[in-house]
Image (cartoon, rainbow, N blue to C red; front, side, top):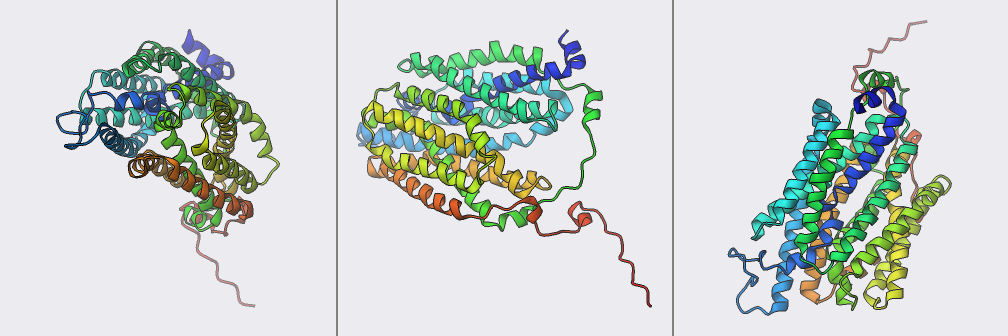
Amino acid sequence: MLRFLSRNLRPTYGWVIVVVAALAMVATLPGRTHGLGMITERLLADDAFGNGDDGKLDGFAGATLEEQQKRRRDVYSDMNLWGTLLGALFCLPCGRLIDRFGLRITLTVTVAALAAVVLWMTHLSGKWPLFAAILMTRGFGQSALSVISITMVGKWYRGRLGPPMAVYSLLLSFGFVGAARCAKPFALDDWRVVWGGMGWFLLLGMVPISWLFARDPPAHDRDDLELPLPAEKGYTLPQAIRTPAFWIFGLAISVVAVNTSGQSLFSESILTQQGFRVDAYYDLMILSGSIGLLAQLPVGWLLRFFPLGRMQAVGLFLMGACLFWLPSIHAQWQLTIYAVVMGLAGTIMTLLFFTIWGQAFGRLHLGEIQAVAQMLTVLASASGPKLLSRCLTLTDSYALVFHVLAGMSLVLAGMSWLVWVPRPEDAPRLDLALATNAVPAPATAPQEA
């Protein structure tokens, strides 16, 4: 029945795919920094995971309990760093597997693998098995499942992605906020309760949904969508990276990634150090996510009318001001203002990241350009928790990192306000045959008069 609907009611069934794709992206939560951030402090306090080879808590003789906890946090940030970097390699085979086996099999197997790893993690002890589990949750969740989720929408709505992607983005916001609400009542329980719940949801909920509802578009419809495109203008990768705009926008989103990954993983520690209760992390995540949900459509509308550089300057200024203020926040009303403003700044920066590369540099070589930009964010995201943990070890506070990031944000805000954002038609002219790797025809010698 579902196969019949997918073949004969493609426009209608495409919305089913949008919902399944959004659920698949929400299912990446155990492999994302936000998901790991829900259990980080309880994980660090678990005697099953130690720093020494024997798995015990004391990483060095004669250390105080506070020193032991700092050392464990440092080791955990190293695990997260290498798990994120190596897990990114899981992205590479996804496209080929989707093309060969289809969306249904690829999605189902990936979700099942992630569920197995999450459930396996609840029975582990020792730092090396923990590292293996973090690596695989990052690989199957943050990397592979994210690629599959985005590809699902692209395969069904090629050339008309606007409305489906808007709905997809809204569903993601609802999904992640809902996940935080579901996890909040278990903030003081053993971390295995939350992690096991995620694993069983993936295994008993997402695996059947993936198998029953994920479908490839009909073959004849895919053929109909292969329409000839006019020659496009745009920058090559070497030309793009020689523009100041590429690096200003790339560095700006990298600063956001450092802050987001570091705060997400150690948010509970950051907030309890400033006097907030343990579950304040969930309130912060829910409120900032809700603000992001409400701000998506208005910010997206503003991007159509205002220069992208100046929009980024506004987002960076708001983020920098919040980061400078964060170490001084000790009251609930202050945390609420921080969550609202950071949610708005995060929405501006995220939408700019999705918009800038194609709008400024064109689609001719967009894949190569966006791959380099994505690499910058991956490296920055992996380094965030490490920077925060080292700062705490050396200074007994996170304040220095936040002040440095605030300063970088404000400097980049000024540069963004002034930067010239190129357009695809501004690209240096290339011979079309050279740009498409074709062999140009020999030039005809001019005839003598």
